[in-house]
Image (cartoon, rainbow, N blue to C red):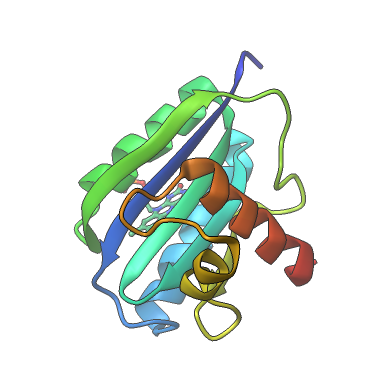
Length: 135
Ligand SMILES: Cc1cc2nc3c(=O)[nH]c(=O)nc-3n(C[C@H](O)[C@H](O)[C@H](O)COP(=O)(O)O)c2cc1C
């Protein structure tokens, strides 16, 4: 299956939260992710998406290329992309969490994380925490 790879990005939302358009996007994403052996989580808060993708490098890169070209969000900015030693979201073709569930901003305040220079490791810590509660 090749090298396990991970990618974290942030983007600006366009679709209303939990709209039928957003839920339809999520359903297509989950179907394709299963096909590509990709797992991960999408967190939405204050008009921003944070998404972690993990899986075979070729699949992650192909899906990320589609995501970058997708006009349903803008300002897609990669925060980290690197080989991974293990999957962190193996139970999820794409978990979804949003501000109503728990806030990354609150997490940042509690952990002393800088919002000026967000640290991918700290964002990942929040996303793993989210998935552990969704399970
Ligand atoms: C915020 C956001 C997150 C997305 N996440 C995924 C994803 O995890 N996996 C996926 O296959 N597509 C995801 N998509 C949809 C892709 O951009 C794309 O529409 C889909 O993969 C179908 O590929 P295609 O448009 O090249 O046919 C996402 C789109 C948006 C706007």
